[in-house]
Image 1: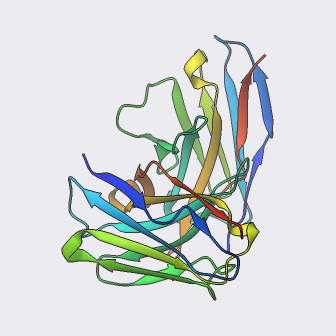
Image 2 (image 1 turned 120 degrees about the vertical axis):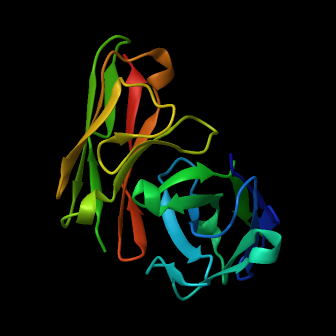
Length: 119
Length: 108
């Protein structure tokens, strides 16, 4: 059973860069689509972007100019960087595994980490 | 980008009743790349249905999904107390994913 765990600073100042890492355990980082998804307090889910183990990426068009997702397969980790953050980026950030065998649904999720943007 | 609109926003029902949740896509969803999730307070979402109608591992058979193209439905028969939660639909296409805004199923 694969497990995902987010880590990184919980408090980020406005205009700075939010950085999170997801560590995958209990399974291979290969042949899956690894995504970041966020949820502002009291609101719905927003897909941020994904990385395939080969390094291919794509991002939500509304965030594309500020997002970078990368992976370190040797450490079974993938990371999110979101630049120039504002209070609107305050959210619970989840990492999740997308499986083509399950028609690109997300079958495994991290527990989520609340990141607050505030000075 | 395909937008997903869920209805109703809130469903107030009693245990034992059935729930019907709808999700409409702004364009046809290719190859049934469509899923439903359940989320309880302070928990990550849990995959219920993938491929529009296939139950994920460990999901009880009172959960069923149907639909294709632009109209999809999640049905929960015989609601149990543990089913009261928020439900999200999700679609995939061209290396992009989108979610609906959610339907809350609350105890009446």
